[in-house]
Image 1 (cartoon, rainbow, N blue to C red):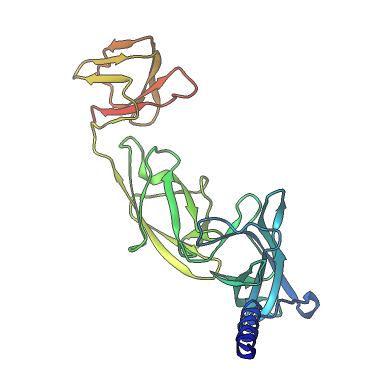
Image 2: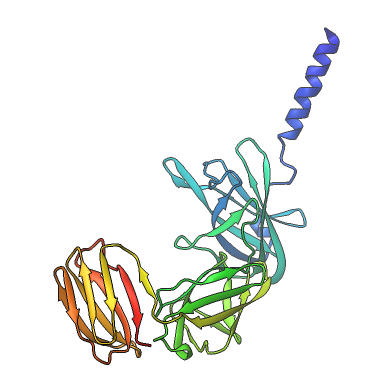
Length: 308
C-alpha cells in the first residue's frame, strides 16, 4: 500500500510541476525606458484563434518578460490581445512570444517582432496574427492584383516571384497595385514605401518589391507583368452567348442586360441596353466588351477581347 501511495505522490507531483509555466510571467514597466505596442490575435494549430478570457500573451527577450496581455473581448469571444512591449534599447531587440493557456501550459509562437520605440504593429482594423506554426514568412506577399485589371496574380513563394497577366488595353507604365502582405510587413520600391491601392508604378520591366517584416527580415519579391492573349472569351455565367465576326456582334441572352464596349485606351465607346439579345455592327471597334445583367446580384458576367 505504501508503495502505491508513493507512486501516486510522485505522479501527482510530476503533473503539478508540468503544469507550472517555465518562464517568469511578471513584467514591471517601470524597469524599462522604451515601449511599443502590438495588437492582434493568435492562430493555433487547431485551426482556430485562441479565444478564452484567461489566455495570456507574453513577450520575452532572452527569457526575460517584456510584456503581458490578457485576451480581450466580450460574450463568448475573447480573442484579441493589446500588448505593450518594453525595452531599455530604443531599437534592435528581437522579441519572442508565448501563449499561456488557462491551465498554465505555455505555447511558443513562431512570430518575432523587431523592437522599435513608439511604433505600432497591428490594429483593430488589421490585427497582427501570431501563429503557433508559421503559415507564411514575416515578409511575404499574400495577394496581388492591379486596380485597373480583373486578373489575380500567381504567387510563387519558392522563387519569391509574382506573375500577373493583364488585359491588352492597359498600359504598363502607370499601374496601381493592390496587395496584401504578411501582418505588419511594409513594402518598398527603390526605398519608396508602397501603399496598396494608391501607389502607381511603371511595370514595363520586372519590378522588385523589398518587403520588410516585423522581425526586421527583408525579402525581395519580383513582379512580372505580361499581357493576356487576345480574342479570349472569359465567361463567368452561361446566361448569354457572343458571336464575333469581322463586321458584327451577335449577343443572345436569357436576361436583360447592358453591353459596354471599351477602346484600347480604356475609354467607353458605346453602351447598348437589351432585353434578350443584340445584333450590332461595330465596324472598326478595337477593344473590349463587358456584359452586365440588370440585377444587383448578377452584375458582371463576362468579357471578350476582340479585333486586337
